Length: 329
Image (cartoon, rainbow, N blue to C red; front, side, top):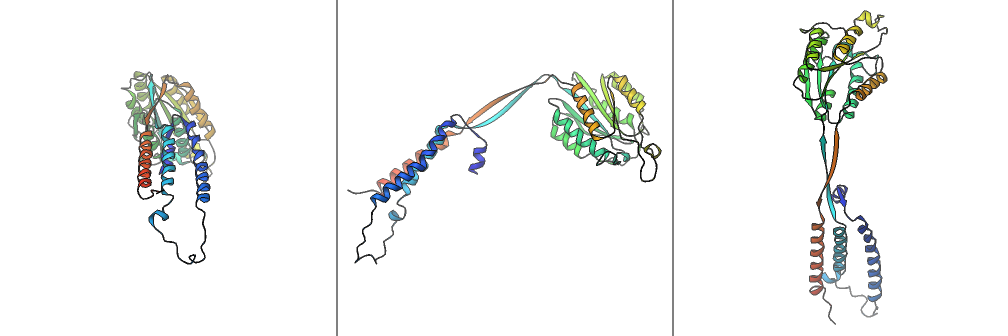
């Protein structure tokens, strides 16, 4: 418990703690003198009689121990222990960001280990950690769309939402890109941030959904929202001998390019996890927020309890010396 307390403590005068090295030296000198003073003379006619034990003889060193503890507490008090609290003040406006994930069944494809969706979650987590002062939200979609996290600066909530993403979450087949974008726009349309962006990640062709991509693009342009689009996946032969395109796992690069171009964003293609990491790093550089964070250290003094304990120990020691351990000439 005491060790945990010291972990959270800062000292105003840490050099004073060097005086603690004097305590073992004082103890050594004390016991050396006691050994010299308390010499024993063995009387042959009485050596067989057991030495009588009293409170005074049993606890002979108690006053000295109390004095050493008092010195220890006094040195700690003189070093001025204090609890440090760091406060931060954020000035400036950040960026509002919605990460829009495709969670259709094809996102379980393992061309990007361990799966497309898991790789996307890992990289998105790193992206969130890299942002400071921005508000971030999470939207997922397949044939329908759903908001996992509103746009917020509570990054713990955002990271938990990312961890909860899994393919088949919505239990609907299809890839409704328009619906996913429309829900993302809805999360941002009332934002007062200087910049509003959507990062759309998908591996499929728009299929199903009640809102077309053209309508979602129009909505984004109306509210000044930029959309960065990421097409994820590679073309390879699956276990059935079909290519991804034949198996219906391809995405439409022309559509994703059009979405990005019309809203002022950019289109990226991610064929592996490294490429996906580079894409998020590029977006991180393109969308910088003018955030200034100032840190302040506030201290709460903790020396008084140590000083009071030292005084109490000295008081108890003096009482014992004048009573139980009093020496008569």
